[in-house]
Structure formats: C-alpha cells, structure tokens
Image 1 (cartoon, rainbow, N blue to C red):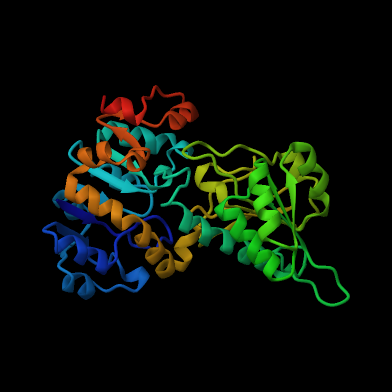
Image 2 (cartoon, rainbow, N blue to C red; image 1 turned 120 degrees about the vertical axis):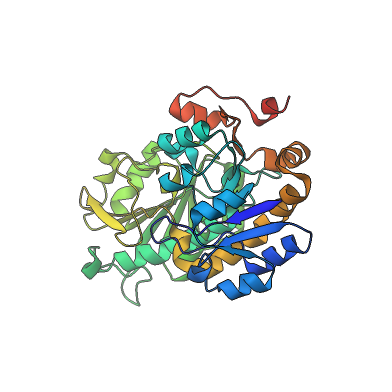
Length: 369
C-alpha cells in the first residue's frame, strides 16, 4: 500500500502521525511510505531519520496526497487538504466531525473513506483517544493553575495553598481518562478536588483509588451549588463521536467568582460550556462573564514529542492491519476499527454525527452489508 504522511498545518500543531520506527515496520513489509519534508521536525524527528527507515520524501502536501492511497494524519484535514482528497483516498486521523459541519460536508463531497481515531472502540474503551485524553487531562490542571495567577487574569489563587492558607478548589466535570488525569495532578499539588460524573461504578472506582478527592453526582443542581466555591473548572465530558453536552450554561458561569478559570478539554467536540469557542496555543484564552476560558482545540500538540510517541504506540497495529489487508477488508475484519468509520463513498456512517448536523446517516455495518 502507498501511505502518505503530510505535515500537520493546524495552527501550533507540532505532532507527526507516524514516527520513523513505524515507517520501518511498514517498509520492511513491502509498503511504500511518502513523508512530506519537515513533517517530523516539530516532534524532533529529522527527514534523515525517515529516509533511513525507508521513507520517500515529498516536497509538499499535494505531492504527498498525490502519491498515497492511505493518508495518516494527527488532526482533522484543513480546508486546503480537503481539496486534495478524492474517492480513491482513505484517511485515518482524529476527525471530531460532530463539532464541524463544513468538515463533514467536505469529506462527504470528496467521497473518500474516513476513519476517526476517536471512535475506534474496543471493549467499551477508546484506545486511540485515551493517551491524548491522558495528556490533555494532565495539561488542563497545569494550564489552569498557571492562569489562576493574577498576572494571567486569574484570581491570584495558588491551587496547592500553603500552611495556614486553604488550597484552591477544583471541579472536574467527567470522570473518564481526561478527567481522572486532571484530578490526579490537581490532587497531587494539594488542591481540593471534586469530580462530577453520572456513572456510579466510575465514582466508586475513583473513591477507592483516589484518596483525597471527592465525588459528586453530576446534575445541574449539584453543579450550581458548588460553583460559587470553585476556582478552577475543568470540562472533561465525552460522548463518543457526538457533540459534547452543554453542561455549563452562561447563567451557571456567573456563579463563579470573577477571575476563576474554565479549561474546556471537550472543545474538540464543541465544548461542554455554552461560552466555549476554540482557541489556539498562540492565543489560548478569552474572558466571558469575567471568567477566564482556556479552550485550545489541540492541547497535546504543545508536548509534541511525548504526544507523537504515545499516539504511535496505539495506532501502529491498526495502521499495519489496514496496510496489509487493504482498507475495506480491514474494516470488515476488525469490528473495533469499523466503529471508527465516519464517511464511505459519499455516505455518512456515523449516526451521532448525523444527529448533530441533521444529516442522513447509516451505520458502518450497513455500509458493508
């Protein structure tokens, strides 16, 4: 199979979708890998390392897409990349289609086959999303703590407190991978942490494994009750493949003290606050209702080498199967991979995305029936 690795062009996105060792794994099995010049530099992988592992370097995105049958990326294709996609392409990447009607329409119009990392599912887990959720979760506490500083626009609260001064209070909405990692870092620096969730088994797990944190059933009433006492809110809600529910309304936001911070990890899926809008690493924050919002849509891109390696750890077995079996056969043989199928021959194959945009859809199984 001919596989293309383009340079990521989303603002401040420094990851690369495949590392040299994965290229070597593919080329040693007879596959051709076309890597755009400079694609790995943001993650400290040189062109020479890719060449040594059997890759062919291409000068630009057009050449990379032109050579490849399978495009492997990190982030969703940008407008200029959508223009390069055809019905002969398959693309494997994070898509988050429920948050973008233009992207959904673009993929459908191209008639390419698109497979979303974030909806590949195995044993009720999302294995290709989990490592990025772990990184984003840990980052969320770090950036939240930093922006609570007065000179960054925050309340001037040190989350860990000191002897004689109470620690800052953190509310984490969602007890999945991102939320759990956010809470662990917050508790580790001494903050007063409350995790809100609706899954009682998950809350029992958190109660047993994370001493020093509190759990609270996630409801509008409970959230409204605790917000006036919270310094940092971390939104870590995920509904696989669907738009994030708007759990924090503008009215709720007004319950927070001015200068409190909201970090919305769910921004990739539209965000879990009414006031959320995507930001970038270059310009990461804005104020609404006197609350500082941090809503960067590709948080793990800031720690690009760690994130790239973590992503490759979980994607390479799927990439190898797609390359060895061919896209259609791999989708039919692997039920986990098939759950990631988003568009196929001009049809939307993700009902949650169809619901989000009021577009007719079929299931991945129906695509191959």
